Every structure is written in structure tokens, then in C-alpha cells.
Amino acid sequence: MYKFVISTSSFDTDNNPAIQRLIQAGLQPVTNPFGRRLTEDEAGSLLEDDVVGMIAGIEPLTARVIQSAKNLKVISRCGTGMDSVDQTAAKNHGVTVLNTPEAPAQAVAELTMGLMLAGLRQIPQTDQLIRNGEWPRTQGGLLAAQTVGVIGLGHIGKRVARLCQAFEARVIACDPLVKQAPENIALMPLDQLLETADIISLHTFYSPELHHLIDTQALARMKPGALLINAARGGLIDEQALKDALDCGKLGAAALDTFEQEPYQGPLLECKNLVLSSHVGSLAREARQRMELEAADNLLKGLIEAGVINDT
Image 1 (spheres, rainbow, N blue to C red):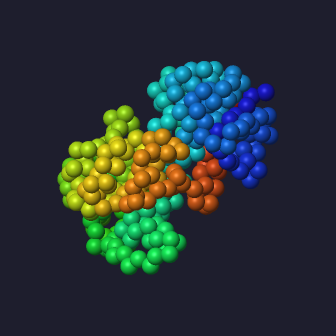
Image 2: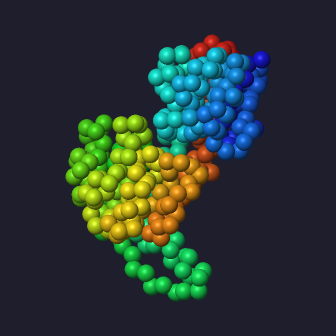
Image 3: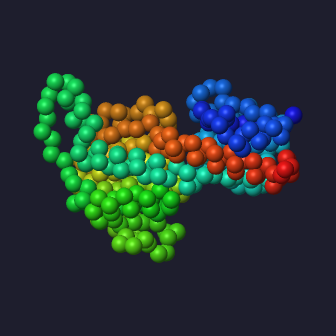
């Protein structure tokens, strides 16, 4: 009997028509036994010879993992990012890789706005001070008065730009893959954006070439007191350089939903001018449901195209 793996830590299989269709076609589901992100070795151990499909989370699907999965035909990412999958290895081994880029976009964009407003108005710090018996009169900043620099104008970046414009903020952007910017958004090189923006929000994919895109030099180019937001991928920011910039007051604040190593236990926890979130950008109920439905549907269609099951 062929199997398919669902590696995400949670997944509603009962209310998913595509999953039920796969089961009715004779495929056996194998779920994540750990309730957390899988390691490379754990992912490899689940992809045994009789596994033909996978609904993937953000576990590392390296060339070694893919090569060991002898019968794997389809990887369907439940989410947007593809950097956790070695796509070259997948192509070389005839494995189709699919994702759900539109499904989580609104959820991540809305969390970004929450992080932005929390950083501007120091909401978490004020909450903590009140709980400690104080009554702070903290003065923050208006989003409407800021220039927001969006790095990456994909599904999420475009939504963030529109939401910022709804707040009457000026929006500028950097994306070498975009030739025509949306209305009222000025495209510019990265260095110019870093020097111009009051708030910088990352929404680009991760690749080795973009590792530590925001490093010591990039941080030095930013305006004094700037706010940095990352709800994209942790590897885009040099976390030690960010801590240094926060500690010395170069940055006014930062807000992060993603980190190089998760769960995060590093020195950024010491920074009081930092808002932390546990990689929950897509974890809005409605977005999660859509992601799961689309990921399962992608897997079903991929296995039909691969000839594993019949289109009946």
C-alpha cells in the first residue's frame, strides 16, 4: 500500500475532501509523530520507500532526504516559502514541488501590520509595565507619518503595501523581479530604500545569496531610530548585528516573527525594544484552513498527473 506523509505538526484531515479522496484511493496517511518541526533525519525516516507524496511544513527536505525517498513523486508545501526544499534535487529525481502562495498572504500581512503598530506604539512594553504596577505615558509614532520600505513585492509584500497606504503612510519598495510598481509605490535600489525608509519590512524569499541581507552594513545605512520588521525568513537578518543596533540605539525598535534557529533562545531576548513572535504569520484560522485545503488539493492533482492514482 502506498502512503503519503503529512509532516506539519497539526492538520485537519477529517474535513479535507482531497485527503479523504486520497484515502479512498487506497493511500495510507502518515502524520507527524513529534508535534513539532521535523529534523532532517526525522523527515528522511518518514519518507520510506512506499511513500509517494508529502504535505510538507518547513522541515529541511535536503538532497539527501529527497534522494533517499525512492518512490516520492510530489511534495506539496503547506505555505509559501520554498527555501526548505532542495528544488534542484527534486527536479533531478522527478519530484514535483508545489506550494500555496496565496493562501497565507493575508494572514502574514495582517500580522506584519500588528508588529508594525506594536513597535511604533510600544504596546508590549506598555502592557508589561502596567502589569508591574506602573502607569507609563509612552509617546509613540503615527504610521501615517512614516515612510515604509517594503523589501519584496510578492503576494504578501503587495498586501502590506496596500494596508500601509490605507493608514496614509508613504510606501517605497525594492524588488529586482518587479519592473512595474503598483500605484503610488516608488521602486528603488536596496541601498536607497534603507537610507530613506522609517520602517523597513521584509517580505522576500530566502536563498543563500540573500543570507544576512540585513547585516551590519545594511543596518548602518538605516535612519537613526528606524523600525525593522521581519515576518519572512530568519536567515535574512544577521541577528547579532541586529542586537548591536538595538543596544546602541541605532534602531528605535524591531519586530520579528522568524529566526535563524527556532524555537529561538538567543541573545535578542535581552532587548527591550524588540517585539517577538513565534513564527505564527500564517496561523490565522481562516488562512490555515485554506492552506490545508490547497496543499491537499495540490497533492491530489500532482499524484493524478504522476499516474499514481486515477482521475475518477
